[in-house]
Image (cartoon, rainbow, N blue to C red; front, side):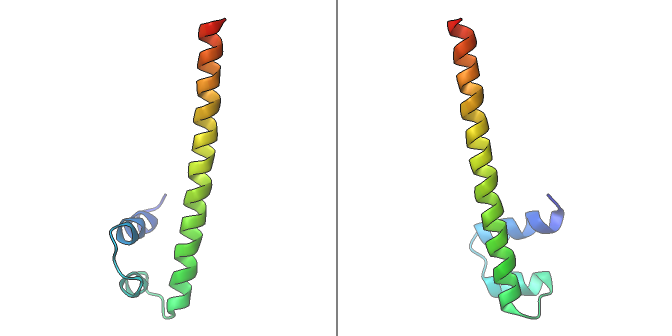
Amino acid sequence: MCARHSYNTILINTGVSVDFISQALGHSNLETTQNYLDNMQENKVKEYSTRSIDMGYKSELNVSHKAG
């Protein structure tokens, strides 16, 4: 994750306005910022889903090793 993405993730998670984030990113159109933020959210959901699946699989492996 790049610094620009991290910075904007922090801003959006702390409730900073989309207008401010748009200015910080240098976007001339608020719709561009909204698309950027929507894409960030979709990627975050995918990342969490993958992590949850991976952690569940690892937990099953640990149980199998202990049982066997």
